[in-house]
Amino acid sequence: MKVNEELDQLTKFLEVGLEALNSGGRLAVISFHSGEDRVVKHTFQTMAAAQRGSVVTPKPITSGDQERRENVRSRSAKLRVIEKT
Image (cartoon, rainbow, N blue to C red):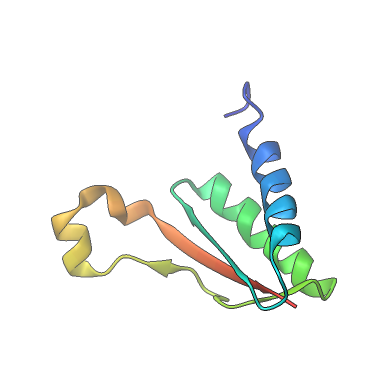
């Protein structure tokens, strides 16, 4: 992650992704690592504070018990959504 600057690239993607949306459009991101989720969370909060969007999911959406039983990899997945204003 460090060598490929993945977290920096994620931040850039979130900025470009939000700008590409029309007003009312939503950007949804699924993260699988706590570092990724932290970047998404803080970037979305910063965007909301700058009135560029509103966070649709203040808490991440995670997999339910049945999903985790059927798909073990889903246990670390977190979905966050922001809507462009």
